[in-house]
Length: 302
Image (tube, rainbow, N blue to C red; front, side, top):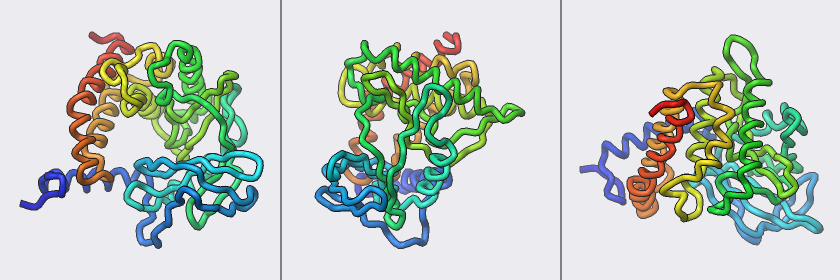
């Protein structure tokens, strides 16, 4: 029987391929273009408008590589639109650029946009200032002091859905509209980053996506009790203001789609894929059940 190196059968592999096609339609792979060279620690990048920066560290995400770099007198955040298996994402890079330019320096009264200081377009790299900030999936278990800013993130998301309405129940937003993509500094400033291409959606669909992303925001956070029982005050803070724009059924569908995509995660193979699936079938399943119950509470279901 045909299967993968981690023991998956042919049916599962076909499911993975189907999921990858869906993901590619939503993100835009650069099919047919030459492969990218991923930036590496110690590499010097000569960025127009910024100068030479030296990569200090990086993290490989599913759809991008991000890292920190040092210049002559400041530090920078570097992002490359290259996925875990080396695929390039030209449409994602271009969509991100278009949205960032459309948004300008601020979104509404409360959100500042992290600027792009320079680009290496041939390598799909952007360079931004490194702004120390917290996000809802980076705060670990020290949540008490972050409840108020998390609630501000939720209020800002609701403002976006309200203020960017274009009529007939639709809203002009962007693919990266996600509670995880709004950070806050110790001074209380809110910063928006990771935009993705512009998107016009039904308001109910856009809000459901935001809520599902918020509810599952700490699904892959550092180990802790929140993996079994999520911190309700944080989850409610970022999702409750958005709930009036959508309904439970749409949020439930989005949560299920997130779970299916993560369960198969087509960009992971071998031991990494096996470990991911095992985790999702154990603690991940308990966590998903907990956030599903929280979604029911948000819409007053039992």
